[in-house]
Image 1: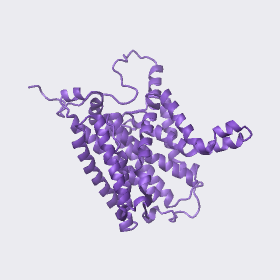
Image 2: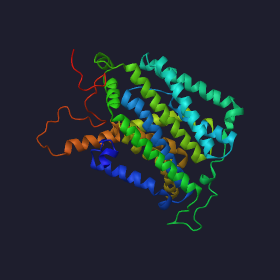
Image 3: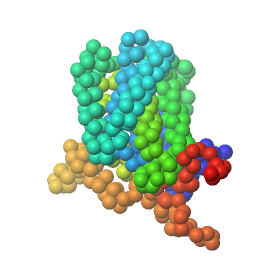
Length: 388
């Protein structure tokens, strides 16, 4: 059952399985282990990034498409919930209408971008998506009547998710059982469901075709697959998942603005996490998001502690000053990319593959460490098609 739940895409590495188990259990029990506000916000941000980065890996890692418009769909999901909740007031109807409208807008926009832009070469498609994303961010900043402009929109969530709603008078295992607690686990369940759904997609026959197109689109076309159609469908699916991630972020923050969900720096973070975790693997999004967000959130605090301890050593205290945390963050990521060129997941899977005992089976044609393998489905969809 566990294999079926993971779509038979097992970690294939004991270290990777251990890291994934620690990450999932840590996120599942964060309200009880670290009940503070900052810890909850960091854990919630990790889960949002897991969905967002995994959806982008569906484009870049599995299909080989470089897009700079991914945060646009992320922002559409966040703005959909924010605008609907602001106009209609707090309630599940507003959330459902906002999410439904955002998903529909993302579907149509990604479909148009895919059909009209994916026929061009990769670099031109990347430039087109960058222009569209920039135009959308400008539009969101200027339509202040709808989006709140640069100030964004603050709104109220349904009463069941509001922090003032208490379900138990006394804390349970150190955690306050209130609307914020319920919001966190709503986010957790949604993240797990969306990640499992993406695992199902990339390990389906459709996912195998995407990987074939990534490796050699000319050969995929030659055996009967229309690469433009599959690329467009991949673009649409990635946009829908990114839109759902944006809606989850808006529900958690109860706020959305251009800098929160549309900033180009967010797109750079997504690219960096994909590379660190490992392209072409959903598990890479989990590992990369956990490491990146933890480093982004706590590295400055650790450097402050170190600077206080080394205050008597002028040179060292200046080097590890909290004001220079971005320098050290960048250095850490440069080193991680240098030592893990195929990503952390790819490196761990390759290590496990090299160290597992031989059982007489040939390794030729085995599944690559980065992603899934398997035979391609027939282009017509029928396995037992008779030859004419």
